[in-house]
Length: 180
Image (cartoon, rainbow, N blue to C red):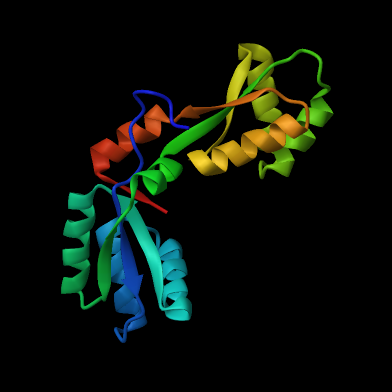
């Protein structure tokens, strides 16, 4: 599924467990350690409270272990869970590239792009790029999600391909983790 030579997905994930710590402290700790926004941190904390646990972020094993140690110093209950190769590949960063076929009407392309979650303005911009350059990136996500999006576009009669997101991979290498 992953192109030869593409970097693998994350090796591990940090799981946040429901905690008796003060909510504002949980949010502050998550924001401090992961660089999540308070809104993103609240979503994860609420999920952990409701389900008993939630995935906080994914990345290399050493990065996850260091972050878990720091979060534990704040009094949070966390664990590092190793991802198997199949999980890591499914979570590897990817993009969907949509190609110009010169035959599909713009409104049909716009409808298909909106069906996969793009707003009308972004869809119009993507169509202009496709017409000008012959192709454009129309979705970023995991390989699994990108294959789902590409399949939806193909069902609409459009030519799309999933590629490794090397730009995102470079950022992950630079910063050591991917926030969800």
